[in-house]
Amino acid sequence: MKTKTALIAAIAENGVIGTGDDMPWHIKSELMYFMRMTKGKPVIMGRKTFETLGGKPLKNRPNIIVTRDTSWHHKGVTTTHSLEDAMNTARSICAETGCDEIMVAGGAEIYKQALPFADRLYLTEIHLKPEGSITFPPFDRAGWTETKREFHKAQDGETADYTITVLEKV
Ligand SMILES: NC(=O)c1ccc[n+]([C@@H]2O[C@H](COP(=O)([O-])OP(=O)(O)OC[C@H]3O[C@@H](n4cnc5c(N)ncnc54)[C@H](OP(=O)(O)O)[C@@H]3O)[C@@H](O)[C@H]2O)c1
Image 1 (cartoon, rainbow, N blue to C red):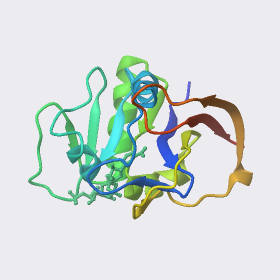
Image 2 (image 1 turned 135 degrees about the horizontal axis):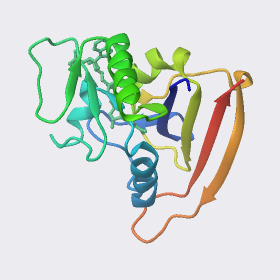
Image 3 (image 1 turned 90 degrees about the horizontal axis):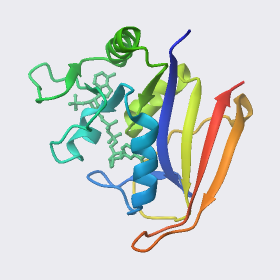
Image 4 (image 1 turned 30 degrees about the vertical axis):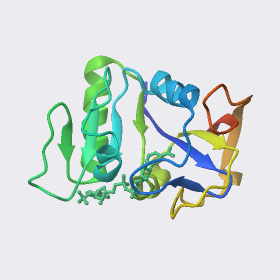
């Protein structure tokens, strides 16, 4: 079976995905969704996104970090120096462990480069228009079929409603 490549992102109504060092919302149940969907699958992240995790790799899934800095290392992650290198590393892991999907988890620079290779998009629409300069790259929806749309009301302590969507490449 072909290993699929998926992007997983939470995107505000104005396209914003982050402020640089954080995300402009706090939605625990959406974070839990991210954790469920990526569990056991290789997760590719840009070095800047990894730094937002406070030095703690995501547990129970291989963390593959992309950086141009050949001296950069971190305990508990695999360091790669190009997106191609990261995707090949992730595919090798899936060949060994039997996982069927590689998860690309941002940020903006990495989403932009990985979008042309994606088979599936897990996009959560965050119903906010926050300030922020980091945005998801524009893409043509005509090339995608939406297979899931599920609205979630903000729970106690959560700062926004959100809608989970899944899109498959046509
Ligand atoms: N809402 C969401 O779902 C979501 C998800 C993820 C992240 N975010 C947000 O996105 C923001 C970070 O995004 P970002 O675009 O600034 O950074 P990023 O994509 O996380 O990381 C960029 C870094 O990745 C490395 N890189 C990129 N392309 C490369 C390539 N082709 N070869 C080798 N290394 C490469 C470089 O690292 P070096 O500089 O080390 O060389 C580059 O500086 C944060 O605010 C984060 O909270 C949001």
